[in-house]
Image 1 (cartoon, helix red, strand yellow):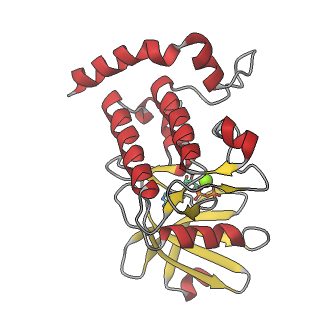
Image 2 (tube, rainbow, N blue to C red; image 1 turned 120 degrees about the vertical axis):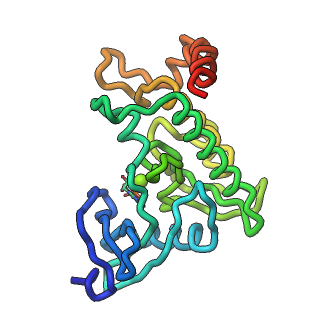
Length: 242
Ligand SMILES: Nc1ncnc2c1ncn2[C@@H]1O[C@H](COP(=O)(O)OP(=O)(O)O)[C@@H](O)[C@H]1O
Ligand SMILES: [Mg+2]
């Protein structure tokens, strides 16, 4: 009803999250979009942060926010549609058709690094994302990666940090230094990106519930140095792909 009123045609609900729902839709001019529908209670902050951080930045490796609106107690964010969904769906899919080549993996990693670099060096203020993880990395029709979900983001001066009252982010991706001192700064995103790199490289989850020991990926790497051992194989595979 609201979608029609605003000139959007909502087609399919892609996902239901704790903040609301994400729909795939079309604008009246035919442009394919994703619409995040946030149902007020407790999640208005998400809306404000996404609009503050994303509305004035434009980069090929950041999802584009094309519009936003508030309708009574409901909030809507309209983004360009990333047809291939999120990176997690590709890293952990059981289907053979949903396998990323080494070349695609390294290109996705480079895209994410570019997006982060752009955010952290943005002249209007360093934008700290605070929730870098595979479900917040979207893939467009050409598998170009775009950072998304700025619901926890914070704009601050470069080199500055602020002390948050509580630790925010996703378990397994949160920088241990920030967990100890609560200082939010760009370094936390770099740590989370390192965890994502290990996932892209190993195809493993941050915590693998299938194993008897529910060990975190970062601890496994510290113990086995598996990422370092895998690196030459990875690099030679990439050369072979070219
Ligand atoms: N622009 C988009 N294109 C395609 N899928 C999207 C888009 N935005 C969000 N999604 C899908 O919805 C999921 C949740 O969106 P996200 O912005 O991360 O919301 P939340 O704050 O609830 O985590 C993403 O992991 C992705 O699967
Ligand atoms: Mg998310």
